[in-house]
Length: 272
Image (cartoon, rainbow, N blue to C red; front, side):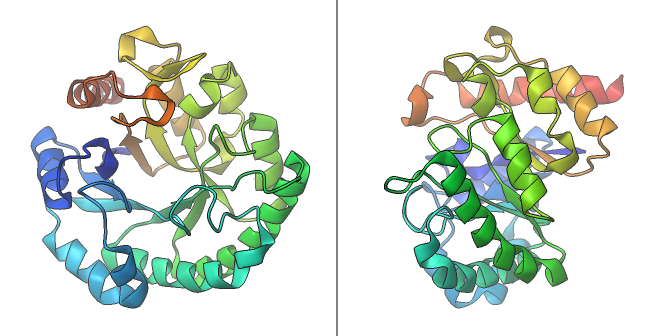
């Protein structure tokens, strides 16, 4: 297991600057996406994914650990729980996979979708499973793992429903962020049960009612979490994802300080 950091953690830095900061901190890779000053050029990625991926790979001072791919311009637009956009989403996803191969990213993560219209949670889940099947088929020959991130404000907000999705969409992995369950009051051991499907991870402290908080003010036990990953045979990237965003009022923490504290905690666990 190795540490990375999400490029969107530092909204005022360019992608090159995030990569340089990661290198200074001794963090070996960055997750990339379509947000803030570090955003990839999504239009170019979809137009010429292989050339663009190769360019990013050569220019970055660290590796690329994950691509966060959003189909539309918001969480709701063209989301996986809507059956209306499967053809367009597959076309775009095939390009995203080519980018991942070229840039060297072992994983791509996408969101599960939201409640559309009068859907129930179970209807939304069924639509997402159907939407995932062609994406997983497209990814299989590339070697890139398709990861879904359960998150608050989607319909996929419980460990039990998340396990149901994974069982029904053979081959899918999780981009797991314990914070998205802890904020709703789920216990850490309930989230641990999802470990067989872990494909990528986001690390930040949380507690019931707070999606993000300082390392010493939350309820997540990170040494125990790291051991859960190890015992499950996980050998991927753990991305520090402290953010400065309006989403869930995550604007009150010193992102750099908390990233360094998480780095040091992981190093101490690894050394032990």
